[in-house]
Length: 203
Image: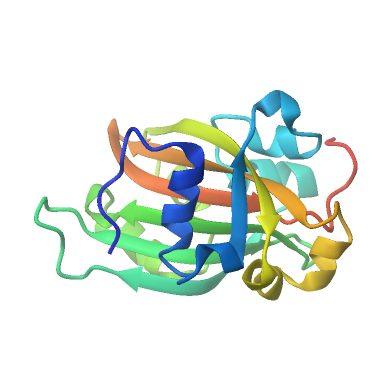
C-alpha cells in the first residue's frame, strides 16, 4: 500500500505515485508534465481547472449521467496503524453514448465514510463523486494541479487506441487533487481526460 498523503509532493510525483498503485512501470502508462492552467487548451481547461468533482463536470458536458467501469481494486482490510482503511481503484468513466471519456485512480480512506457509503463505493456501480455528493458529506476539493499526459501503451490499452489517436498527437491533460471529507483530508485523485470523443468547446 502507498504511504499517507504527502502534503509537499509536486503534481508529477503525486500522479506517478498513484499510477504506481496499478502499473509497475509508470512510464509505460504515461509521462506527466506539470502545466499552468493558462497553458491548457479548451475544453480540457474547463473540465479540469476547478474545485469541484469531475463527475459533475463530465455530466454537464455530456448532458447526462456517466457510468463507471472499475478496472482494478486494492483494499487494506486490516487497516493502517493510524486507523485509516485505504481503498484504491482504477476506473474509466463512460458517457451516455458509451464512449470512454475519463481515466481515474482514487485512493480513499474508508474510515472517513459511513458503512452504507463504503458499501456503495465497494459495489463499483456508481462514480465516487456522485456517491459522496448524494451522501451529503461536506466536501472540499483541494490542491488541484494540472498535468499534461504523454500517453504510453498501457494508457492506450485501457482507453482504446482510437480515442487517443483521434486527438492531439500522443497527449492529453489531467489533474491531481485531494478531497477533505468533513474537514479531514481523506482522498487522493488522478483524473485524466480521454481526448477522442470531446467536443471542441464546452456548452
